[in-house]
Image (cartoon, rainbow, N blue to C red; front, top):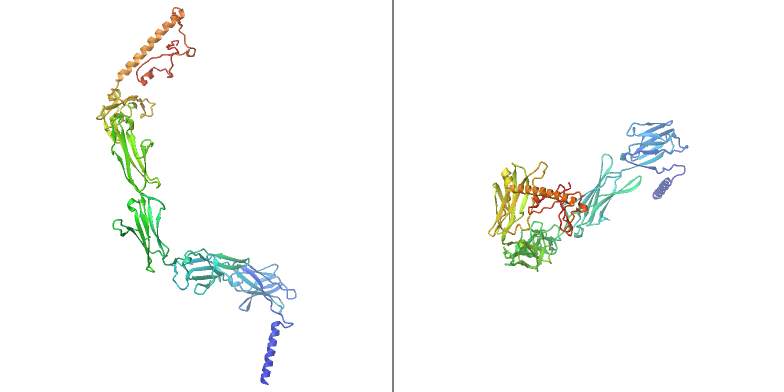
Amino acid sequence: MGLRAFVCAFLLAACCCSRRAAGVPGEAQQPEPEVVEVEVGGTALLKCSLSHSQGNSSYVDWFSVHKEKPTLIFRVRQGQGQSEPGEYQHRLSLQDKGTTLALTHVTPHDERIFLCRGKRPRAQEHRLQLRVYKAPEEPSIQVNGVGISVTSEEPKEVATCVGRNGYPIPQVVWYKNNHPLKEKKNWVQIQSSQIVESSGLYTLQSVLKVRLAKGDKDARFYCELSYRLPSGNHMKESKEVTVPVFYPTEKVWLEVEPVGMLKEGDRVEIRCMADGNPKPHFSISKQNPSTKEMEEQAAGDNGILVLEPAQKEHSGLYECQGLDLETTISLSDQQELLVNYVSDIRVSPAAPEGQEGSSLNLTCEAESNQNLEFQWLREKTGEVLENGPVLQLHNLQREAGGGYRCVASAPHVPGLNRTQLVSVAIFGSPWMTLKEKVVWVKENTMLNLTCEATGHPLPTISWNVSGTTSEQNQDSQSILSVLNVLVTPELLQTGAQCVASNSVGKNSTVIFLELASNTTTDLSTSTVSPHSRANSTSTEKKLPEPESKGVVIVAVTVCVLVLAVLGAVLYYFYNKGKLPCGRSGKQEITLPPSRKGEFVVEVKSDKLPEEMGLLQGSSGDKRAPGDQGEKYIDLRH
């Protein structure tokens, strides 16, 4: 009987509980609170939705519920509101005619239930759940800079992701090469934790641990934070990072830069390469061509041997050795290096010379590991004279003297060539650069006079006036002499003369000095008067005396006056009819129509053109004689 009573009591209690859970008719069921969402720092609008049967907005009490304990925070009486002392005292206000309570400067601590209650003591209150949100800062990621070895048998830390000041706690997802990672025993581990700041915001920290393989040496890792705002779901990504991955060396090889045909003078790098990380310890050796033994070269710690400039002696067999310090395994690779060259270029004869009219052969030779092509060029003009190793010069003249260049090139190796310059000397008396020249000067000033001569043997230069001289060899056959002298009246009278001489003969240059006028601005300008056969004679030409110029001018003036008087007399008799002219003994003196109103005087002289210039009119025009050889003298003015 006792057991039956216990069972009945249990069933009765269960039935009562079931009815209470289902809701007893006449009892009010607690509804789910209305959700209000707002971001941190914003304003939450709490609307009190009480029906007329439950109360009116003119008499409302507002409560905040913390740990199931309601606390009065605001009163509404006759449409007027008043805050209760406490944490919300200065952040609450009424809106919408007293139906809405505004909470400003929302913080994460404000996430709770708020309720409003009407005047009737047993009226059902309206509950609101305030949800607060804050987007986290951009996630930062810190990679493991020490590196991870593939020989490890358990996951190692790859990177740490930190998302600061978010609310609520964001979700973190790790990615490898844009693919999300999930935890996998002995391969992937994700350890996340959070810190609550004094502001109520959360800082999330997540550590990714992965067991890596050699194929992950370039893998890109990043983290993603997912969070929610009143506007919806959002996410932020960190930057991508790559973790150092260590794996043993399996292969060693040699690389040569530049690629292709190498030549002397190139900058060549011989590099040891390996597929391990970290790189093994490298050493580079070269085979001795005599002993056939490998001799270590002075390579850098990075396994690079630099040949600069590369020479033909650098050709040979090279070997790279790599020692893995972790596995103590040594691997090697060999490669033959060939440096193409052109060297020991020679021209014979080494100092060629010849007489005028003779012939001369120049031969060019060179050594190379490639087939060579030869060219002969004239140094002054760059003209190609011959394609081949032998240059034949026939009937040598003075102009053939000077530089000739032999070019030996390897056509199969671009840029590989060598040249050799040789100077051909032609025996002869000196050649003067200028036979005569005029220099405009000012009296009592210092003046530099120059004289240049070429010849073989190399000539020497002397001056007929005193001064300070200096000489400079232009090349093996040319010499330049500079005379520094004071311009005196005597020097103006005599001028200057330089004489170049060698064992074959001599030659000279004459320099005339003229006083510059006040309007002359360039005293260095000289008038050059070369003679066509100035360098064909070894006879020294003497300076003309300055007095002879005056005599010539006076003589020419007298001749012009005599001819003018004679012409006037003849014209007078012609007009009177007393001077018979014509083809039968009577020829009329008539001026050509185009020459009326002009004076025409023709005077022949073997003087220099500078002296002939004194006979020209003010216009400087020259007139030709008539068709039949007659000369006309116009004296009408």
